[in-house]
Image (cartoon, rainbow, N blue to C red):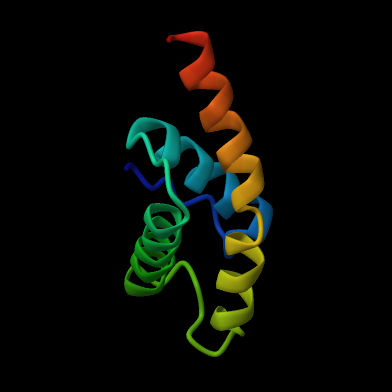
Amino acid sequence: MTDIYMGGEPTESGLFREIKEAAELEKVRTFDEYRSLVDDIIEDKLDKGFLDKNENIEQMKHNLESRWKEIEAESDRIVTTFS
């Protein structure tokens, strides 16, 4: 994954786009895999200083995890298309 710093902190919608792309590349098929991916990307952003540790990271994770159905639907569409 390549990070391009454009100034400011990533938005939740921007993080979701990044997570969605990573989920497609990594062929994420389960909620546990998705949750792990969310954790990894959030931790990476924290480590690189793109997110502030004083933010409500747990709420951000929860919000991103709650979007699993969008990832799952896309995953099902891809599997069905290429099966």
